[in-house]
Amino acid sequence: MLKGALTVGAWTAASRVAGFARDMIIAALLGAGPVADAFFVANRLPNLFRRLFGEGAFNSAFVPVFSGLLTTEGEDVARGFAEEAAAVLAFWLLMLTILGEIFMPGILHVIAAGFARDPTKFALTITLSRIAFPYLILICLAALLSGVLNALDRFTAAAAAPLLYNAFSIGAMLALRHVLPTTGHALALGVSASGVAQLALLYWAVARAGMRLHLPRPRLTPRMRLLLRRMAPGLVGAGITQLNLTMDTFIGSLLPAGSVSLLYYADRVNQLPLGILGTAVGTALLPLLSRQIAAGDRPGAWDSLNRAIEYALVLTLPAAFALATVADPIMQVLFARGAFTHHAASLSAQSLAAYASGLPAFVLVKILAPGFFAQGDTSTPVRVGMFVLLLNFCLNLALMGPLQHVGPPTATSIAAWLNVALLSFMLRRRDYLRPDRLLFSRLARMLLATLLMAAALLATRAWLVPVPGRHVPVIDLCALIVVGLVAYGTFAQSFRVFDAARFVRKRFARLGRA
Image (cartoon, rainbow, N blue to C red; front, side, top):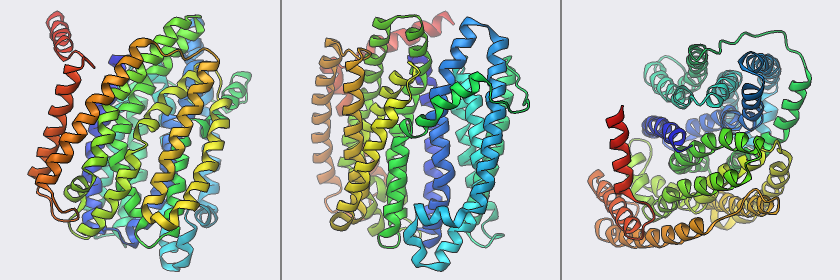
């Protein structure tokens, strides 16, 4: 599991770095203006489906069934199941894409109601959404191919594919922004083009793995009905974090102009550790848990969940505290240039600190949810998710007035922690989660090391960046990063959170055997 998580995490990290480069260019060219707001809303809809399918509902329903068929009935039966799923998925997504293109104005009245107050901005958002929306069918079919590769324990191509999204977005933005009406048009076109590239890459990887797939006539076979039954509630259950973030976009559209952009940039920074750690561990955990539960190995499933929580939190806890502590220097260095002012960066930093408070919860949800999915239970997370979604909506309405752009991320973080509490309680009640002494001991030591690191960062920030909202040299942010890494590494090693020397020795031993 750890090897798979490291593979996914490394490629996800590369994709996130490329994503930061893309967002820095967008910020410099568009700032927090109306075109930026319009594109971010247009991009939110297909990306909601990407995250639901690529990281949530589809994999949670497809991987356990495909893995079970591969183990018990062989490769030919598993291939047939994957082809049936691809045919049904393609037909359904094609219908959904056509309907989305036709009824896009009505959809945007729901997810960005505040934009309707500005007819020009609303019309631009409709146009950009229609250009980007075909990405939906492309990336969801790519998610099926990713699920096949993950079930075969081949994680590289699926994890590397999102790099193409960032590469095509940057290329289209730089090459076409003077040709098309706005830079937003170029970005939206780049999104759809990247879907074609990702689908092609993953199809090649699946064929190379010896699992070449064809597209038969769509049929609702008994296995397809089972897949759809498991998948439908998972669309909400596995993707509740994304639905909560989409609600932030809805609330942001009701706030002053530019709020959607402020929330977007803050979320992008927060997504770096979330994508690297939460997605990586959750992706690698699901096939392992599925095999253990199918084999009746409950102690093995307990251990896998405990270790997955440790692997994720050993870096997520310090990342959350570090992001909250040095949010302003991060946003100043990354985005305060061109059309994106220092004041806008400072406001976005406030949203980032609020998102960071929920970062460990966002990651834990991605680890706890596979505990249900591996049992074939997608209904429990959806019940919890619907309750959390309602709570998030109520909190958003209550906080958007007094906290403005800080209200939506604060509400989302509170809702995420409640989601973790409810999922943990239900897994423990079913005896699929049994925290051991090692987990509690390491969590206590992680927290102590994290608090000491945060104190070191606060002291360093007060010395290097005494006044927030001002220009921050890159070297100062680098110094803060080094202080945080060294402080946490030193304290974590001292408190035996992990044994770095043992890890290095094992890696060198493997290289020697290779």
